[in-house]
Amino acid sequence: MNVAVGLKDDGLQWLGQVIGTIGLAKEDRLTVFQNNVAEAAQIVRLGLVSKQDVVDRLWQIAGVAKYIDEFGETVIQSAMSPLGDAIPSPSGRPAVTALELDDFLGRTYPPREKMLAPWLPRQGLAMCHAFRGYGKTHIAHGVSYAIATGGGFLRWKADKPWKTLVIDGEMPAADLQSRLRAVQEKSELVPARGYFRVTAADTFREGLPDLSDASMQGFYADVVGESDFILLDNISTLCPGAQENDADSWAVMQAWILQLRRQGKSVLLVHHDGKGGQQRGTSKKEDVLDTVISLKRPPDYTADQGCRLEVRFTKSRGFYGPDAEPFEARLDGHTWAISEIKAGDDDDTLKTLREQGLTIRDIADRTGLSKSTVQRRLGADE
Image (cartoon, rainbow, N blue to C red; front, side, top):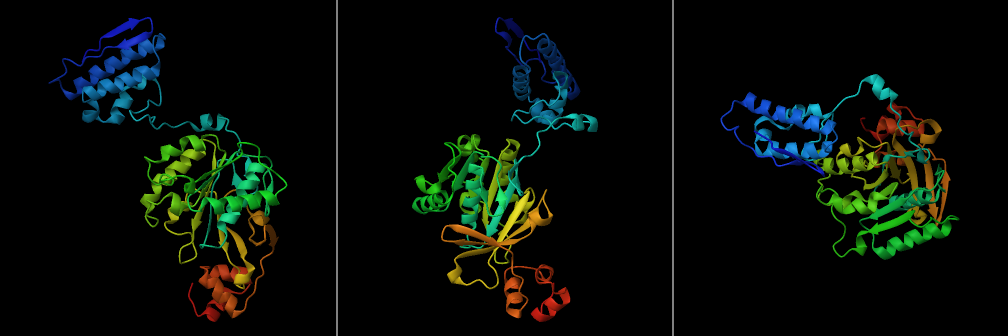
């Protein structure tokens, strides 16, 4: 292959014409390509054209000459090494590289500030899950408003305001408006313009694009672009195409929230509980999360009490001790009250805790009873 190169005032212009390589041995064909890379690297060093322009043209030539089909992308990327490290593939993905330990430790990365202390850092990924109708959206809205205003909610505190985006896939617009108005009216703080924005499925004729479809995620690029914190309420309605019990099906959504994290954003996922009292579907959802909050009704809950919850951290990366202790929260009108969890140990309480999905060990830890006593009184195995 000969590549005719013409130099003009605007830099390097590749006229590339693939000739004379048909019938050559495989290693000879690769040598011809490597020679062209060496020539290109010299021109880049002279400052006549950008490295990216050269790389793009070399990939084009490699495609036309069938080098990619014959050798594979990895070999072609390696052949381009004279142009420098991390040569991007045709899709734009750079080659995987590694740093020496000293080089890695010598780099400066900004510390992860606490967006909502103690459980949500900047670039934090979290989930709040509960059965339908328990009040997880009430909790999520309180969290979002505190982050947007630099205020507090329950036992948690934001030291400064962060740009917040609420993406709601479920509630009718009127109900969502009523909920958020109640949150704002009860607070002494008002978010600055641009610090609390709402994207609601009910305000779009066709709803919101399916976040479990990689081809649809780009529709959210502009709206999430300026946000520091994003509430996704909820997984079921925003990812209708995902098979919740299929770990591979979650991979597309996981890749998206990890991309948001790399952009410096924090995300709170709202999700439903399954029949066993854990978050519904594959446990893969929790793998990359920093924090998981489980909301349960107390064993002595009655319907007239409205929204009364036990708030428990089932995953608490980066915080522990008193900060991670469970507590009770109750919404009375538009006002939240918090208290310690009451640890009853009567048979009805034990049975209710078991029905909520707690293990024998969990029940023993909560009530102070031994595991053997809990097992005997419930007539159950671990």
